[in-house]
Structure formats: C-alpha cells, structure tokens
Image (tube, rainbow, N blue to C red; front, side, top):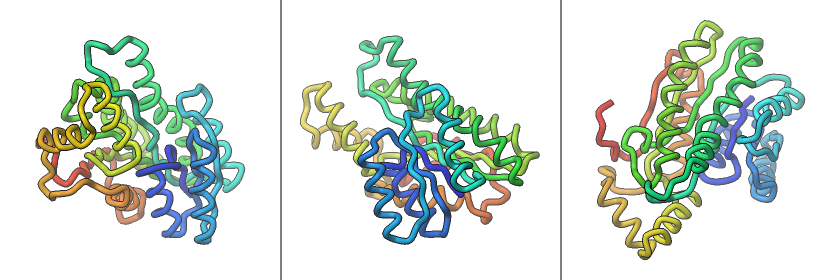
Length: 256
C-alpha cells in the first residue's frame, strides 16, 4: 500500500499509475481536488483501488491526516513517495525571507511531516520504503531557484539521516534527483522565468538546455522517473537505502 504526495500532475501522477499497474493500492494526495479527482477516476477505470486525500502538505498536521486516511482505508502503509514540491522563479536579489520559509515548508518540511507520520506505522507493519523527490538543483544550484534548491539539498541530507535511523526497523529511504522533465510544472517554470526576465519561453528553454546539456539528447518524461521510483520501493531494491539517484539523462556534471 503506497502514499504518493503531489499526485495530481507530472511525476506524482506517473508514479501513482506505475504503482497501481503493479498491483499496489494507493492514497493520492494533492491540493487540487479537481485534478486529483481526474487522476483517481483514470486509475479506477483501470481497476486500481485508490483513496483521495485533498490536503496541503505545508500545513501542520497534514502528514498525520494523510497517513491516518491511509490507515483507515487500507490498514497499513508500506510505501511513501514524497513528491510534492515547487516554488517561484526569482532573481536572488529579489528573494525575501518569506520566500525562503515557503521553500523550506513545501520542499523539505512537507516530506519530514509525512515521514514522521508514516514511520511508526511502517515499523509496526514490519517495514517499508520511502522515496523523497529532490532535484538536480540540490547539487548544481541555480540563483533563480534559490529556496527550492536549498530545500532540496536539505532533503537529500535528511534522507541519508533518515535511512540510518530507521534501518533496524526494516525501513529503507532513498532520494531521487530528477533533471529537466517535461511536466506541467516545468513548463510553468519556463513561463515564469521568461516573464521575470522579459524573454520568450522558447528562448528560455533553449538557454536552459545550453546551460545544462542533456547527453541523452531529450527531456525526461514523468514515466522515466516513475520507473526508478518503482524499482526503489520494490523488493528488488531490498539492499538499497540511504542512496541518491540522478535521473536526468546524464545532465548532472557533479561526480558525487
């Protein structure tokens, strides 16, 4: 049984589809009731058993609410995929303290809340697997994505700490760093960036790809990332924990 946050769009939607196609029951969580409902309807038409939780993962108590609904409906939590995230595109000089706080709340603390809520139930059920979605900006920062990248770097570190803390309870925790993936979110980021600097969207996308060329020659798809996550939560990854995986077509230049 799996919980997926940020499940209404992009990578989260693809993860939910991949896990249900493999027989998992899934709790879908996002802020948009309409978008989440459409995803749930699509999955149910395919025979999946899903529960919908409309919640804001930045809110206090949201982790308990989401995991509580999973326990009420399915009686256990085996997998947690912390996919919720995002943030504004702003030049560094324009960032206010509120931007940094919001970035941490959405991109770091939301995952912490869900982990704190899920771990006791996973331990009681004999174990589990957690995957936290960070970003390539956690390793190669971009000044236009300051709060986002900093929060995702914290999430990478947290995942390693978490993995060591819960290993004796048969719980595994790993982190995935997607590169530029063709999602609704990345298209919106490109549009926001273009608006902030007064340039056409196509020009912004071309500049992004010049700055961070993708050796495999294409943008990623949500399904590319979902496939890695599905492996990490499966029994085939039973000896994999505390690790960070780049899924970016080879774009990340750092060797670590």
